[in-house]
Image (cartoon, rainbow over all chains, first blue to last red):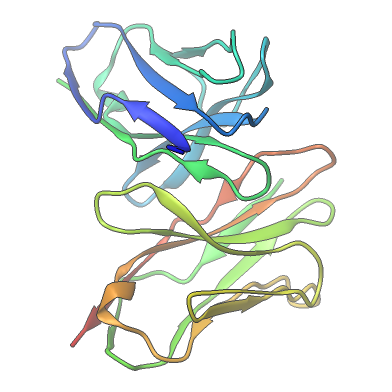
Length: 109
Length: 113
C-alpha cells in the first residue's frame, strides 16, 4: 500500500517549458490536493479536487492546471514554467488526516 | 479567513529536554486541528489531530490539546530525542464541507545529544 506516489522526485526546467507532475493514490479517497512549499512560507494550496471531474483553485493557482479524470490520479501541469515556480511540490490525499507524497523538487532556470 | 501562527524557530534542545511549540489560530466556524511533521528530505506526516474543544491528540509521546477559549493547539513532548529533529507544522481545516488545510509556516526543531 503505497499511499500517495509522486513522480518525478527531481526536475530541472528551462523558463517557458511545460511539464506535468504526476500524483497517484491507492487509498480510494475522493479528496486530493497540490501544495507548494517555499522557505519561510509554509505550504500553500495550489489546486484541489473533491472527486473525479471536480477541481477548484486554491490560494496560488496561477500558472498551474489540474484535471481529475479518475479517482486515482491528479496530475499538476505547469503551462509555461517561470523561475518563481521553483519550489517543492506535494500532493496529498485523504480525509481529515491527509497522506502526503514524498514531493517533487522543481527548479526552473 | 483562516490563519495559523506558530512560534518561530529554529528551536534547539538537548536530548531529554521538554518541548513546547506554540500554535494559535484564527478560523471561521469550528475548526479541526492538526500537527504534521516533516523529516529531512521527506513529505509531511500526520502526527496528531483533534476535532473538538478539549480533545487531546497524542502520538509517539507528543501531545496537543484543543483549547477553544485561547484558540490554541500547542505541541508538547516530555523528553525529546535526536530522532525528533524535524520541521513541525500546525494546521487547521474549517468551514462547512471544507477539506482545505491551512498551515502555519513551520517550526524547525533540532535536538542535540
